[in-house]
Amino acid sequence: MEQSLISSSLIAITFSSFCMIGFAQTSQSSRNLETDFKTAFDKFRQSIIAKDTEQLKAAMAASSYMKMKNQGIAYKMDFPKDFFEGMGGKMYTGLDLNKFKILRALENNNTGTLVTLAAKSAKFDPFDRGGDPQAMLFTFSFIKEGGVWKFNEAPMEPIEDAEEAKLLKGDLSKLDDHQYKPSGIVPPSPEEEAAPNYDYEAVLNINSFGYEVEVTLNGKVLRKTQGNSAQRTGIKKGENTIVIKSKALDGAYDFNVAISATKDGKSPIEVFSIKVEKPEPVITKTFKVDFD
Image 1 (tube, helix red, strand yellow):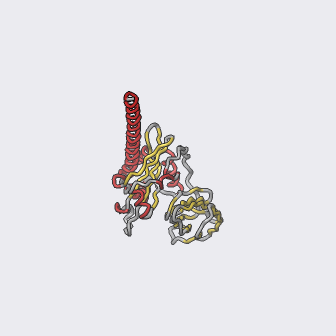
Image 2 (cartoon, rainbow, N blue to C red):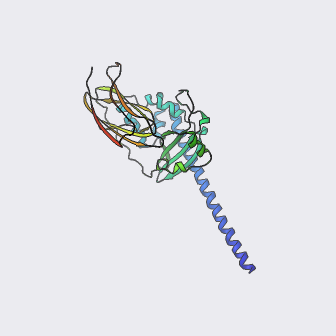
Image 3 (cartoon, rainbow, N blue to C red):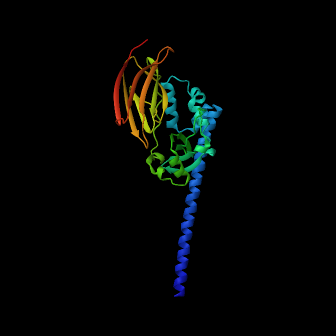
């Protein structure tokens, strides 16, 4: 009887030890992944601070770099100079991960995500707009190329006080949604596009709190956004087609999409606008532009 109890105890101790070893290995693996992601993003951030084109290209995933370059071409910008000196560069240089709370680091088939919280107390304000601070959730995504993690993108999402409180207490159930996890799909790198030929400079304004929105303008897919955004683009004289895809997130309201156009540096004119309470998942419209 005594021998049986001793054997049972040894089995229990051994099983417990294996569990603790497995937990320690998992925790260490997560910490290593977190460190790798932070290092990858810092290389990207430092390239912007240094305004170093080669360093920027080396720090970004190939598909992400070419997507950004093609956007610059589409908007007739001087890439990457205008990116370094513009709002995008300013935002990324303001993302100091040492001031954020790391919530989760995951990888899947050469793709990875690092979800972080810029707490309300951090007063995150990269554009120096002032106003009341709001907690922001960032989902940094990465792609492994040649065994090295490269920065892909970092969509941000404003969250309410109640959501922030739950995350700070360790309730990460919000992060179970697929948008906070790595997709496991490495996108192909697009070819460099030819310079566009359009008649009017234009700005696409999206005011859609709580919606994820993607606009295709005359067959050109523009940057997917959440919340308010302004994107430079171009439209042609005559008939133009816009396709608006949207997905409502928690607390969605105020859906408004508009386009303003200008020519030869004159005052912009609003040429398209749509405002609805609950948009259809896909909205297709045509509009005509003809002014000098």
